[in-house]
Image (cartoon, helix red, strand yellow):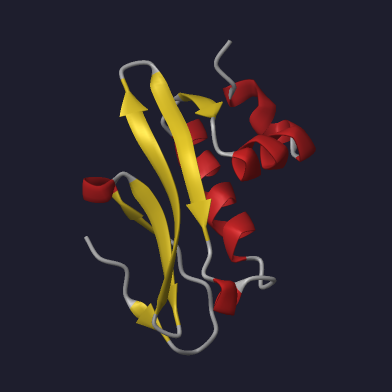
Length: 100
């Protein structure tokens, strides 16, 4: 599944299962929160927002959407990506997802 383009400035996050990532396309640029799927959970490996789009809350929306999905699927996570690690640390509602 490919994320639709959005020219309105609205951040629409799509779960691209085939690519193991959450993505948002805005003004022709693709931002992603990538993960590796494991039997017992997810390893969040990388979050990327193109320089042209930084400072708009896109990474936060990608990661929040991804973590809400993990929570709904009852999956444990490993935040290998520094952005995801800090996000979870600052958002106690997601700390229960951490794999010990």
